[in-house]
Image 1 (cartoon, rainbow, N blue to C red):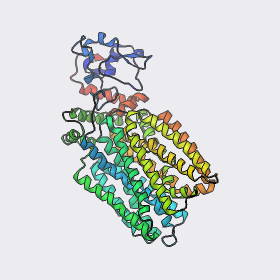
Image 2 (cartoon, helix red, strand yellow):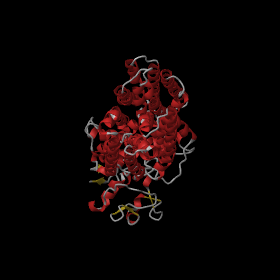
Image 3 (cartoon, rainbow, N blue to C red):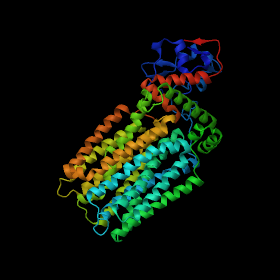
Image 4 (cartoon, one colour):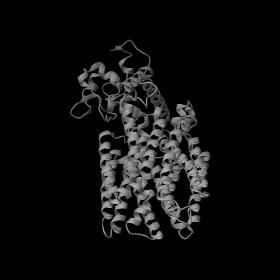
Length: 573
């Protein structure tokens, strides 16, 4: 039983007190607007605007004649679009200048991974030069793929650091690891020493990848979170482009010196990031609230939202979400990730699944060995290959900018689906070029299509989705697992690219990738819900509604039964 007046109970308890069980079911989407009533319309799969107003005047603002349901105190259980439970997405909240600056600073961290991909695309062949280290194909595969393995380990460690010491310190640890690693590689005289430096680079990249999208998501208004989180993917592509360009800049330099110089300039971005973290970036407001530093969190949020915005409501919503999710975690035991309830299980399937999917479609392997693919299409000049790489990098970057806006206006599902369909078609086209006598033009066009459609959805979306679907109490740990899974998958795919392609032929390899893209499409169709416009604190309730997770719903009921006000004489069974 729940003690308290109808007026102070969560919305679903109010309805249950006056309607038979068959009259109310939880909707999968629950779109809600301010001026409406709460009778459930089975035909429209929504909450209708008739009946409830006349029968329940006691919870209307201004009485029965006003006609506005007092959502501010009654809708906290029901998920909806908006910045917090008292906001229903009606207002236009601009992106503040401070938010843009914070997001750009954080996104710079992703440039490190992008630069490593771009620079090694060009440096790979130089490392195999007989006058340099003379790496074999197997050694080069291990070198490229090992970054992802060590990044997976860095991602696992990231949650412990960022949860205990904050997101800002996490960025610093990531940058220091990257700096140490690239300097060790630049001065390596043996393959063993080169791999030793690779360990530090991988740890830094993995650490940063796990923190970057979380930080941006946590300092972004829900209305613009999709666009801002994609800035991380934009930064990755800027880094890739810079890495491609370094190959052209040092094109005329002797091979053994060229790759060393290319690695060394990779220290510029992490040094810049450390300066920005110390001088510009604030701590995540979500982390501050979790640590009990609510005044500091409210100060950060005052820079994120427009002047005069009710940031106290956002802080209270974060506190409620943390309380609710901890209660749900206790309901299923300490192993909420290892033995998840249905709501948390769906979060993990969606978040970690999207991270794995991004790499299983072959993007890192294609990018690291793009020089080999271009060479197979018939282009042999090192300068021409570099020019083609820069063209493809610019195209990929341009599409990312378009995708950033579309994720918030069109939603996550449509772009992910469109991305995978386009990638599948392009993979089959690439396969065709390898059996043609002269497939140079078609090969470059097909590569351009593959990279463009990846950047349209799977690139930014695969990090946007996990950054927002995980609830606050498991976000850092689950994001670390997602990054770990992403990097392990990338390790396997990248470390076996040349071996598998030589074994089954390049046309066979890309035909296989085309089929994989279609299987990933089916997975997302079955499991990915639309999360556009929802606040981070709303996700646990939203996934509970989707899955019927009583652990989370009961936690919500207990939470708002306690905070709703002093209990009255009424008792609801």
